[in-house]
Length: 342
Image: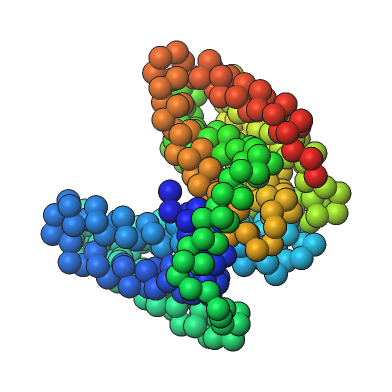
């Protein structure tokens, strides 16, 4: 919920200051975990740590949109793919640190502390890099008092969220990301408990889907820059809906793998073009607010996916649960087709 105000704030005070505030939290908050003694302290640290993503994510996307020119689809896709790679590397690196001592069975508190110290040093390295890259950033903005700055902040948010094209396009990403969240939670469970695959095969299915998305995003972003974004988003939504709905019909590895590959392509189609289309629609001075709106709706969809899928699977079964969620993707298309013009 902090992504929208963070992005809008960067439109007023500048990207450099806003990005640096997020990077500062990334750099120093990991060390706060060393002093956690109870649940309430952990919750407070997690909340503040989460602000770093809320601040840095939409603002960095706005920086890419600011500088990409006619290559917004390609550049935003590269940014997204590299972000996914960083997220994917975090889990195995952390797991390696926790189990790096010979003969260790269960990680100790000291092992967790070591993992957070490494995370903190990684954050400090990114801070040093950012200070070098941003030292000759944007010019100082003069002549704006607190009242005028706050007025610009509010008007920027109002202008962005009142533009139905931005809201509808962001919702397409949010709805598609709902199925991504559902697959993250339930594809491994379905593969092991219903399809009878082993744990390695279940993990491989998700890994293949993510790999396809990472590799194809920049290509699809470049295509959307050249030929338009709307048709690519529509095709991606259809691909995701069909492949997602087919998954609970398969009980063996290779058909499930093919469905995962097509879903990965569909996700790349949608995500490579939706953020770029939002940037195309938005006025340049409000890129931060637009990316904040996009990021908020994106995250709401991602968080809602496992919850909705879990409720439907518990109430019905895998087939009807996945078909209902596929139907949501299909029925959202007319709103996008008639509500957004490039």
